[in-house]
Each structure stands twice: as structure tokens, then as C-alpha cells.
Amino acid sequence: MYGAAAHAPSAPKTLVVCAPGYPADTAAAQPTMNAFAKLAAEAAGWRAESLRALYDQTAEGGLQRLAAPDAVFALVTLPFFLQNEAGLRLAARLQAVQESGAAETWSLAVRRGRVASPAALDGWEITGGAGYAPEFVRGPVLGGWGALPTSARVTFTANVLSALRRAAAGEPVAVVLDGPQAKALETLPFGPDLEIIARSDPMPGTLLCAVGGRLPPKQADEFVRGLERLHTRPGSAEILKTMRLLRFEAVDRQALDAARRSFAAARAPAGAAP
Amino acid sequence: MRGRARAASSLAALCAVSLGCATALKEPRPLGDLAGLGPGNAPPADPVEIATLVSGAEALFAERDVDKAKTAVLMFLRAASADKAPIEALLGAVRAQVWLTDHETDPRARVQAAMAAVEAAQWCGRLAPLDPECDYWLGAALGVQARERPSTGLSALPKIEELFRRSAQALPTLDEAGPERALALLYVRAPGWPTGPGDPDLGLRHARTAVELRPDYPPNHLALAEALSATGDAGAGRLEYRRALDLARAMAARGDRDASEWAADAEKGLRDAGVE
Image (cartoon, rainbow over all chains, first blue to last red; front, side):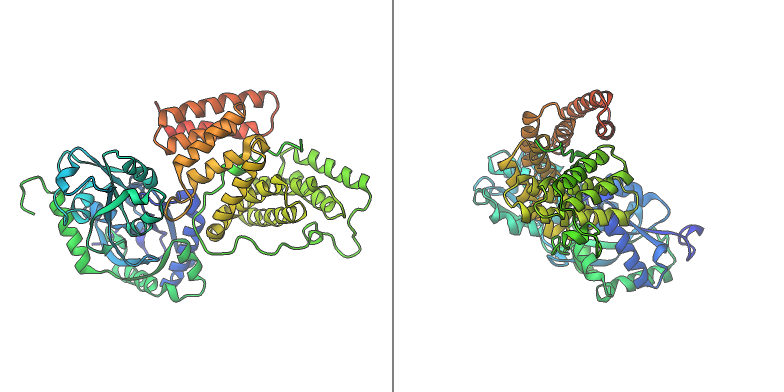
């Protein structure tokens, strides 16, 4: 049984875009969201005004917006997805191909020569834009490297540059970086003082999800098919570029399942079977 | 000193941009076209007429009314289109257009005002390339254009940063420490490393400098409050919002026409910061 009666074909539908730790805020992003919603609706064969899009740069704000019954789709980062997949009944339908690629590889940066193993992070702060989902950091990001000490605190910061400065200055801080950040590390004046000590497996970066089965499957499929060919439509390049996207494509299910398993293992109480 | 510029509310909106790819700077239209001078409508030639146009436009803009500001823009530009017009005419046009970008209710009118502000500021820089006010106001105009046309943000941000840095070096007290205040907001609000120049720590340093240069100017305290909040010191941020509010209320009581907007910004900042 899907959604409320409110989701008749003509009912207003909302796409919630949520990327904690990334630039812009709701008001600043709205012109871009309006243009994207119009483009996406038209690609689905819907009336342009039948879809609206909203951006929220905080996890709390994104959750609040997704709780509203008109929220039928979500474009969210992988940590947000894993954290809320069950609670919001998110169904991953597509992955966004960003300018840096569809797959994201996460890294951990520390002051050069200070950390040789996960155990050395005893009492440290591990911070970054993905830190709002500590299980994501302990699992998909660093699980392959080893288990973090329970005394290590995972925190969120949108100000990764400041965290890197603290790490370079010798504070007990390790910084979780996304792909573009890790790539740009050497461009920083204090980059030589830092080193990457762990890298995750590649995993999806941003996912387009149906929310709570609120939309009838036929409409959801129309929308997904429209997004898959969105990049071929006139006028789409500038809007996608503004969102730092190239196109949408099918989800890498294998990589997503691996991230899901690792996340679940990190979330499980100590001693529980993975 | 040239007329007090009052870019605060405009610059408060600066850099609320996402990154896009459209070109922020294009060849500006001829000044006569910007001024709306048609065939048979020659620019003024008499210096007295030019001076009268500029002072009249200043008086109209000082009222901070949308329709009067539009008229002021046309008067400034008409004066600016004359041979040997004072650069104040172009600067006045940019200031008024930037202000209009913040106060027009119609989004299309805001976009038009922002684009026209950029064009007038480009002429300012061409006619007075060493004038730091031209740099400063071109930076402000590009900032509001980036807000209204997010697709221009990518090409605009490095230019905005360069313009404000240059004006901060040449004339740091311009517009009540405007270049330092603008740099503070740029670094606090722009997308962060590695996507953009955003760097809240650096923004905080510029906000402190702005307050040191002009401690009685409310927008400098608003910028410092925002920078403190962005760098994790919410308590000190609240104190700065409170200082900004007190200063703005005092200025509003003395008849300052911009102060009530600063007070409203400070009240919003305090609300957003939550209860201590």
C-alpha cells in the first residue's frame, strides 16, 4: 500500500535534497532547486509546477522535511541514506554522477608520522563532513582499516579546513575527507605535514531515493526514467553543473550492499554478530 | 570623503551562492544605453547640470525608497554619461542598484538591477582604474549578481575575492571598513575548501579587523557575530549580535535609515543562535 491519497497525479510532490557538510543553505540554493525541479518534472512528463525541490544542509533539517507527506523523493548523501534508510523507508533508485565520479572513496588524514594503526587513535577526535553519521565513519569509511578504539570520538564539522589545520598543528585530530578533499590535500600550504593513513573502498556518493512508498510505482518510475535522461535535455548542463552533477545512473548495488553491511556491523552493539 | 556608501545589507547577502558556470563579467553596454539615453537625448554638457544631477540623485537615494532609488539610478547614469563626469556619478549608480537588488520584490527586477550594477561598476573601473571604490563596488555588484544568478558564482568568486582584497589594501576604512567586512562574509559564506574560497577561520580574522577599524558600525559586529558562530563560538557570537542590536537601535533612534534593517538582522541572528 503506498502513500496517502494526497499523492494523486496532480498532488504537489517534493524532492528533498540533503547534503550535510556541503556548501549553500536553503535560501541560497532555492533558485537552483526551482530550476532543477522544473527540469526534472518536464523530463518525467509531468507538469513543470507539479514538483518542487528543497535543499537543506543539515541532517536535522533534512529529516524534518522528509517527514512531511509531500516528500516523495530524496537526493541524499550515502551516510544520510544509511542512517535513515529504515526509518524513512528510503529506496535507492539512482546514483548521482558527480564531477568527481559516481563512486566516492573516503580517506583519513592525520599529522604525518603520528598514527600507525587504529589503536593509536585512542582518545582522539575523528571529524569531518560525514561525522554526523558516526557508524558510517566507523564502518564503511574505516572498518576495512580496523576497529576504532571506543575512546575515539567521531564528530561532525562542515569546516574541514580548520580541522586539517588543527591536525597539522599536532592536535589529536584525524580528519575524514571525501575524494575531492583528499585529492586537494597536497595543494594546502600545510599539506606536507599531513598524510592519508586509510582509504575506504569505493561506494556510491549521492543517491536518489523514493521516500516511504508515497508515490505510486508508475509515477516513481516515470520520474526515475526522466532523471536518467535528464542530462540530454536542453538547458540541463548549466543546472546540473550548478549542483556539481553530471548525470544520474543506475545504483551500484554491489557497492551499496557492501556499505550497508559495514554500516550495520558498526551500528551493532559490541560483541553482536555482524 | 565621498558620500557614505552603506553597502551593509547588500554585502550581508554576498556569497550566498552556489557554484555555476555562466560568465559573471561580460562587455558592458555603452553608458548612454545604461542611462536610457535615446537618439536626440544627449548627455549633459554643463558641469553645473552634472553636479545638480548627482546631488539630486544622492538626495533621492538617501530616502531608501525603491521608486526613488530607481529614479536616482537614472540620474546618476545620465550624469555619468557626460564627458569628464565625476566618478561619484557611476559609484552612486552602482550603490543604488546594489541596494535595489536587495529591496526589489520582483525576482526579475532584482536580476536586472544586479546585472546593471555590474555593468556600471565595470565602467567605473575602466574610467578610474586606480580607484579602490570602483574595485569595492564591482565586488559588491558581482556578489549580488551571483546571489540572483547562481550560475555566475563560479566565475565570480575569485574575482570578488581579488577586488575586495585590493580595496582592503588600498583603502581599508572605505564604507566603514567595508572591504574587511566583505572579505569576512566572503570567507564565512562561500563554499569551503576545496570547492571554493570559503574559510571561516580567515573570515573571523577579517571580521575582527573590520570591528577594530570601525567599532561603532553595526554591520561590522553582525559580520563578527556570524564569523564567531561559524567557527564554533556561539556564545561570543550572541554577544556580538547583542552589540550590533544596541548600536543599530541607537542609530535608528538618531534617524539612520539603514539601521532598522541592521537591528532586524541582529534580532534574527539572536533568534537563530537560540537561548544561551
